[in-house]
Length: 100
Image (cartoon, rainbow, N blue to C red; front, side, top):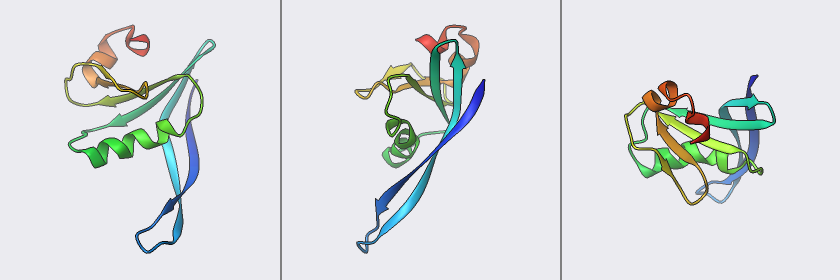
């Protein structure tokens, strides 16, 4: 089953006011008792874009796998928060990509 997950949070604006923002995780896939949160990003050319893609995943407070899929052919990487970033080609062609 694939579903979407949305959450709301407050973000402080430069003028000191607070604004409600909505975050959305692109896909939530369930496979038996396992769950995978998947963000898709065409490109992540800079730190701002990377943070934008990571933010919804980091707000999920559970221990299931969180994956960012990018178009570029990159070497799989795992960060200190446990987020996995993988290239689209490897994600689609490696039958074990959800568990790498």
